[in-house]
Image (cartoon, rainbow, N blue to C red; front, side, top):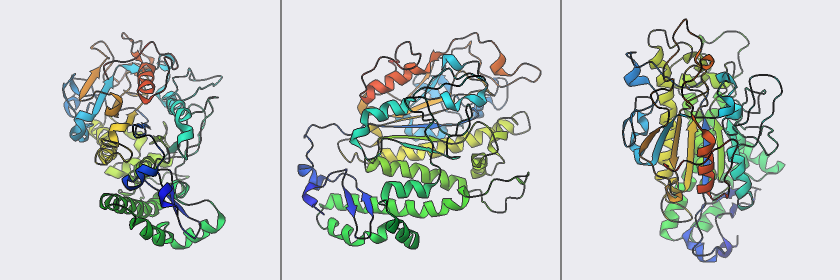
Length: 465
């Protein structure tokens, strides 16, 4: 290894055909070839929650605890139990309501994942035509600067059918980009050199690091004390992720049932889905820390049942995930649905906190300061394709202001659950026009460094963030 030429896109290479992407080290910064005033990388990660969120009516006893949107507005707001795991990150997050894609406001909620990051008028039936997604616009902007242009992930994997996609990423022709759902394949893609001999050796040893110990020791002797601590923490993260990858394989490889066997629970435990999600987040963290990519998407589940993602609710001891949104009128229904959303908030908050606790490898501040996170759904109350529940986090180094709830919905917006005997919310005429979500997307792209004034059907930007 030529240590004098080491930079954040170099790799630790072993004699057995393996390569491990490395974070930046101050020890070699003078030889990295980058200008002293070079800006740290700007990153984008987007996460999608299917099937909407709990929205009980204000007169419902569950409203105070389990209504997803915060109570209050601006800086003076209170998280409900759905979002209160984000309280430690309050100064790094903004909750938004009253945004949606105009072309899809009359869609049934099960058709929404496809257009969440595109804003395309895909409709509920007939000819299907999508457009490029937000993440891929930014990926094209930074593609030449990283090993991978983007990391596309989902729990169900692949592309899925039209209007019920398993991916939220679409290329410049509007074609779905297959999502990866096997942590082992993602890990090997990021850290194992691709050749048959390396793959065979890795299958036998179960660890990339086992093949890199000698080179790792040699590199460590060349590092400053601060970089040695960074390197130790990094190797520990890689090792822990490998262990979690192995654990999560049992859950993700569970065959889908051909009959109703939900009550059996013979092969999975309630903790497996949580470990799986934590592993997926950790893979994004390592990909960002090594600057292997600056763009990632992760779709937690598809909009309908009968997929592996429908088991995610087992992480909190609940039955099939999709059923939770349909059983809110049963005793404890809002609490059950809200408890699942709280689990989503917990793991998102854990990931954001991990970024905040990590000094920026290639500059000042933290990784969260230079990473923009968007999490949300394109449904709110029971199949309603309006008033999307959204959380924006990070990106302070890009000028984002947080610690607020931006309520663009107003009192006239539909905010509550479905009243039995009335049409489903998505069939009801709205008395309030949401802001185009693409206004936020253009704001995000501009702060990420993309020179653009337009995306989908935006009418401007959102200056409040």
